[in-house]
Image 1 (cartoon, rainbow, N blue to C red):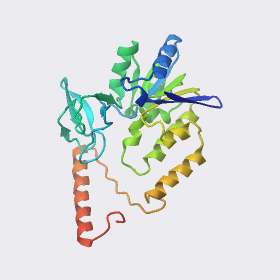
Image 2 (image 1 turned 90 degrees about the vertical axis):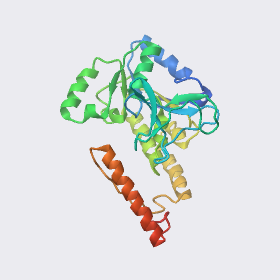
Image 3 (image 1 turned 90 degrees about the horizontal axis):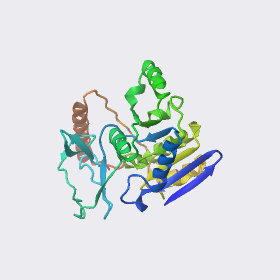
Image 4 (image 1 turned 180 degrees about the horizontal axis):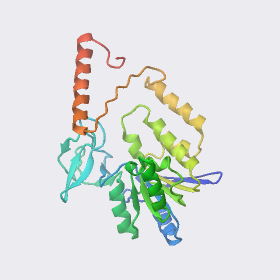
Length: 291
């Protein structure tokens, strides 16, 4: 099932992946890819995770395995020709299994395929070899100029969100947001706002007429609003949600950011800070929701 919207010269399709449980691409997406390949048109695939990774979901109970420390989906890694399950944030390794840890059935499906895994899938399904781009490909003027020249001769590109700010580097005829729900899985009170604005600005900025968004949450107000491209309608819904859960602007929020080139060191510092804050909350008898 899919919902199609025409707004000016933009044609936006929201594809409901729940109606096609055993497919990585819904029929509309697959037919569109084949059509544009046959017509020698350019296609841009957007997936906001890099490397050869993916996450999984149980198709019986819709359980997504999450890290016990970070509460985000555990990723499936390939290491020395073997699969391992590991948290992308804290690097905790979990036992890899094709059995659901909630309902104990084996109807497990890969979701949220990341850049290099998607390239491998596209090559096997459609016989194309897409160019893979990541944030590090555009972190200097020299790299931007170099990749802009390379992209002039490319027909198929897989990119993270970096091309949202470099829209003049590649002008596709079709844009496919392969696994849009990656953004919705991030534990952040304003992640829905960020996700909506990313999609909204991307669609507005690109001169492309055709967009396909694959999602397991087609009824979510982010996607309902993308079909309208109506900022005010979205803000009204977003404020209703924030008021219900007492999120800013209906409360105050303090954010402490740590930065480090060494990921393991960074995680240790954050874990230490978390422990210290919990201790202070306990001895001072603070309400954790208002701390």
